[in-house]
View: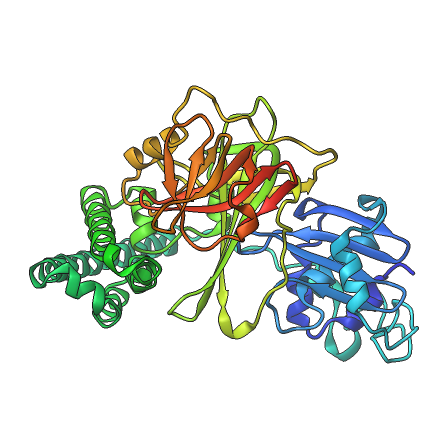
Length: 473
């Protein structure tokens, strides 16, 4: 049965959850709103790049959201119920998608109560809409009617702006001191020999990373903290060469920051990233509305205790330009494994807004819906070097670690030394591969391949083959 406002009021864990939910109580804040009988679902954009998937069950009073909140129901679940109660025509009636089916299959219903009560409890009124105070002191009317904003105080605004400028200047000075120390550290590593550095990178990088954290260069600190893992991923004899490349890119980054600390990409890669809302509000942000495919996901646990979740999207269509987008989320490893928002290979219609950069790649989704029909990958240009786009991106942002690439027809071959390569069918260039592949893929015809090229090795994400699409990440 449909939800009503007293039921939502009763389900809310506290007044602050209702207040937070009220800010999402608009269909425009959601995408993919749909229902089947008493199941209602949709997607809400949170603070990360990927939207949260939310589903509520009106028949058995259940709810599920992919956000990391420890409140049940969370503000997204409450807001979805609220939208259903106040704007039910915003939901399209359709068959439920796979992710809703998966939740229903795992769920154990413990009540047959309708939406008027909590799971396992008797259905109750929970108060009346518009009443001064609902059950347990919770009130939807109070949550939905925020206090009017006070008129701006010019003197207070001026003080706030001055304080912000002082904080920015102090942060910039602190980062400058940290980068000066990093320069001296890099000189010491070269003087001591990069072969020895590769063998002792863990301890050496940890110390300078800690110093950079103190200097408010958090993202650069994380990059250095993860460098030993990248070195250990390649054969021992290749580590000194990779160390040269890694340290050289860091020198380019610090030089770019010193030249222009306000450059969005350099500032992001040294200090802190912009908030998602800042990207959505930026009138100059590059925006692309198109069909996209999820061509790969990479989930890694970092040394700082955060989990990095990278989702790679490819713009679809035979005549579409070859454009990629990177959705990047971080969450504490202690929160446990989060449910996947996207399925590898899924196609969506979405509006993607890119973070400001000379070579835009990282992005957020501002609106999305499942793609109504299957689309093809864009055809790789037969007369164009497949690495040309990487070269252009590195010319704009030379410190970037890797770039996505769409490769033409080729196959995976094994060299005499046992290492695997991607080899173009036209007899052109070959690229050494990172990681391991299933033996069945060796020699298999790859009509098109998506991978990440770091100038050193190619990490495969997905490929089109005579057997169909194959996920490789």
